Length: 258
Image (cartoon, rainbow, N blue to C red; front, top):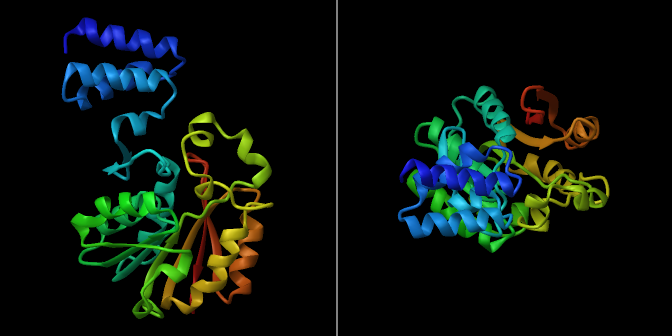
């Protein structure tokens, strides 16, 4: 693409309110296979489609994760959950990515662990379809269903890492989310109930049946919710702690089965 095309794309994106117009323009032009497709991608971004959905991928933990419309886009702060999982269970052999969305967490864990048995699950069929694509190169399996009901029974008592990036936005705060999330991501991936902890409590209650001895459950939450999440983990019999990344504004609750 000639320099003028880059300038024109930056101008269009900036006029649409894109804060990182230069970076986005370079990504669009590098991704588009033809000038016509580049123009169409710019039009979609100007219309308000999230950049990751325009590109068809999101960068996460050094990987290029395929995303598609109607699927939750992985957040960079969730890389903290992946790092904590690897630090807590560096020799994990069986990994489950629950509420998997695109399967980004499972893919990132599998990329860092040799020869793991990898499973992912989500209630949304679009998410499961997307996760299958992202996990295929790791031999991973994506299952559709409601939390643990989606998993094959042979995983009971064998899971070393159970990563669950559950929805944790309180219902009343969903309308306050940025439009890119509110208008383009599934409500089921965002709304965590009245206090944002409905799904987290269900995961914590069911996790001990699936974790191997010494296995760990990791869930992302907010600073405000973290103490209540810790209580839920401990009520289920897990030894629980929090891990915070101020830089990423990330709070992860980690529970270990004794």
